[in-house]
Image (cartoon, rainbow, N blue to C red; front, side):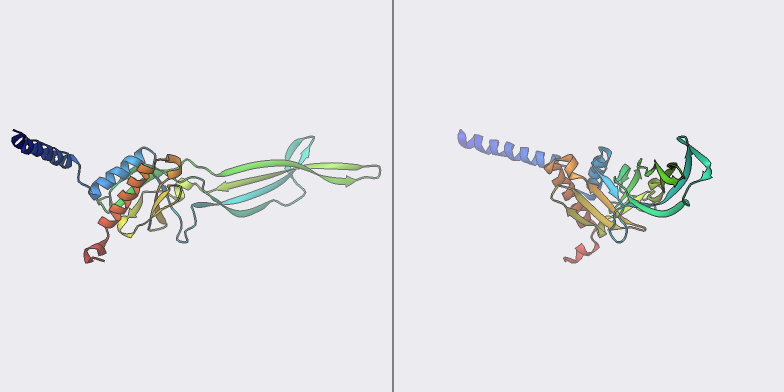
Amino acid sequence: MFDRIAPLALACVTTGFISVAAAQPQQTAEGAQRFLALLAKDGHLNVGLPDKNGAPMWVQGTRKTTYRWQNKGVVDNSRPGPYDDTSAPVTAPLKWLLVIRNLEGKDENANADTCTTRAETVTTEKLGSTSSDSHWLKKETFFSVDRLWYQTTVTDEYEDPAVKYAGPHHLAWGRAVITRAANGRITARAPGAKFYTELVFPGDSVKDPDLADRVEYAMKFLKASCDKAAATGF
């Protein structure tokens, strides 16, 4: 009796394993692209655009310094101050990476391409500031020393990051370099037209090692799938 049941049970178990295996979706470049797109939708991927020297994103600006006399605590803009106004160029790094609005597998001509990721990005970061301080100069008279008050105003104006780094941006997986930092941050970088394009998984903010492993594997899968030299065996 046992001899007749055992083959049947083994057959059922084997069939079950085959069914489970068949239910697992096949790993493809298209699937890896969809996986990254889901991560971007959940805010777990960002875009960085370092320059050709590897320097982080930055914007140019102008620092203007003006000097105006004060009259009883009120600035008198009709009277130039004790010093000449100045203007000088300045630069400032961006604090945040670009936020991905949409991510999909398309090339520069918007054609479907599993070996290129197209990222549409936005940024709300605005740089610029204005600060003012009051100062005084001594004016000696015959009987005493008077204070002549004036105001110094420093204004920093910068170009709009959304304009300078306007997208869409494209990452070619066949040319990508993928790195993983100790804090779980994973970066895929490839040369672009103006900048290097980086797809960044900020592991320190997500704190999910298993998810980080999946992200790294998906990126490396895309790189391997899109490596033109892979067919040579080397």
